[in-house]
Length: 330
Ligand code: ADP
Ligand code: MG
Image (cartoon, rainbow, N blue to C red; front, side, top):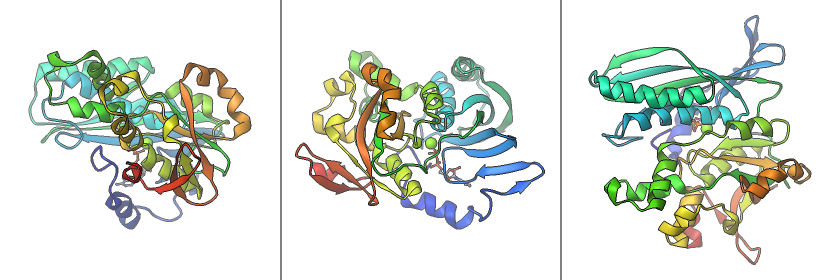
């Protein structure tokens, strides 16, 4: 990722031009088979018949992904959470991780708190830290996670016209929190506190991803914003989608803190929520009935045969949009 804002066009072109090699996905040797290379939330290699190892790596850089002075406990949690979220998006069972730390200095209190946040989340998912690298330089945190799947993992590429588009949790909270980063914490209202915690301590949706295996046709985690990430599903699946903004799940806190248009803008385009966006054939909806009732997941739109992204208004009219197209709606 280039920053926590929607990925610029440069990132994916750069990867395609310099790093994507043909014949990687599907490559087979006596070591195993590469089932999925560049292009999804994790890479997938088959290590034994029907047994897949999933891997994903993410870097957080001070000044780009977080402000100087961010609490180390938050960094420990968050740097692992964003990686586990990629495992969740593919329905994997988290297993172990490696940690590459670049530190400007050795500060025992900082390290203790960083490790505190890191292992609190790791323990939650029974994950083990199995290696890494430590160097001196500007603060930067790189984590690489591994998880396993027996059978087929969820991918971005299986969405079909007529599938429903669903999201987990509520959207836009993390983006809304960025509006209050400068305020002193003591001055926060309780809804500002809630939004700030959503930004600092994302909850990877591992259980949801696991249950969606064999049900959802495609899935992704919302790291760059709903429109951008749904756009990735559409692109990889060769389809389009519409979203009904009125159905987007918004927390009470975001509704209390932001005007409706602004909250909607955060929900459509704000990154960092680490919820899941997935597609489900309508006849599979009953399998997630209890989640729908608890508002743990929400139907927000539908997959279309024509490529593109649309916003659907109350009258059923579709308006073309893009990863940054919500302004059409303002
Ligand atoms: P995510 O937001 O899920 O972490 P990214 O947008 O960072 O995914 O990456 C998109 C895809 O490109 C992923 O499959 C990732 O593994 C791959 N990728 C990103 N950077 C590189 C790189 N430098 N070399 C090879 N593959 C890369
Ligand atoms: Mg991802």
